[in-house]
Length: 440
Image 1 (tube, rainbow, N blue to C red):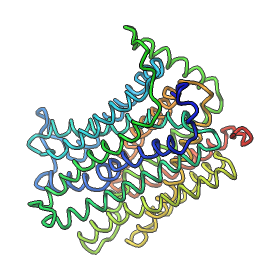
Image 2 (cartoon, rainbow, N blue to C red; image 1 turned 180 degrees about the vertical axis):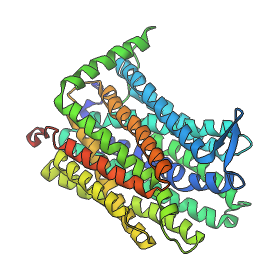
Image 3 (cartoon, rainbow, N blue to C red; image 1 turned 120 degrees about the horizontal axis):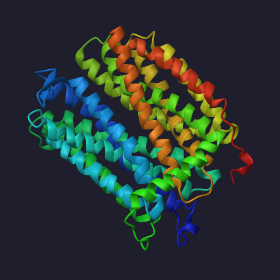
Image 4 (cartoon, rainbow, N blue to C red; image 1 turned 135 degrees about the vertical axis):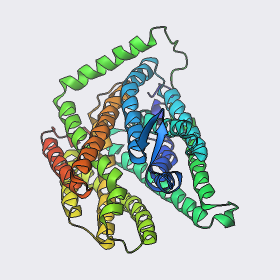
């Protein structure tokens, strides 16, 4: 929370720059580790000779393994996040919790350099801790948005944060791709070693650029003594916020709609690469690999424009109207994706996904923050936002797994999520709109 010494800085360029730079710092994880390089390293190198591994005397398929570990990590975050958020609000020091997750996540990314099949258990531990560190830090990071901005700034600043993340992650991905493709020029003995080094670079980048944010973001109340019953007090803080959310028609309706369209969005982003591999008619494996990387870069670059366009529209027409429009467009993209087969069509889909991803994410975050009443308990409020998103991701992955298992194709899954997007958009129309006269 903002204390009295730093309240006068609210809305200042320095404070906003410090906040947005954390998106620059952490987004390299979501692009390099979650989407681009680590999945290739995991599938084509770690499991190049086998499709399964023995863990604790159980034979597990490689895809089932990584999906299960990811799902478990999201559930763990969903369980711990509200408790830790309540504690952070109670003692008035969210920064110390944010630092904890950043250090855990970034150092675990460095640990991924030693990810090997022979030590798969400890390797997956690094993967899990990196994932938890990334998503856990975002709860506290997002909660600062209400503290550092005035309502009229919220949309623009939220979009600026995502834009910084898109730009920073693309820059590092390009550096890593050059390093991997010309590994000998960089002193690496093989392409694999260059890939592994890219994971460590992500950790260093994330940790290094976070320091500027840590230095300038508002400090907590260091003088507060931590009582013995801190966990119980954290629960009480959480219960207080829950009562506010439950009593608000705007909160409950928005979170329900957010749950539906968020898990659809996150799952579509998750299965995009798998869709490209199995459903698109590439002429060769090399074209497939380069095509997937190009599509990932295209999504990130177009997302920058999407964030700007949809934020401006939200400023003019209102957040709920623009967000509803964007979710309806997501449903249309899913319908179009069902019929595509060629690389050029896949690139078209990537561009549309980037446009809508860049538009939806910052507006959704800003919308929720505008609903929060004037309070010091911003972290607890955003923990509900975060839990809704994480549980939604687990549901989305489950729906995808069932659809893929039953139909034997990724293509049919996009039709299922088309209906979920449509439902989410309809639910958004029931959310009371924000009075633009209050955004001052």
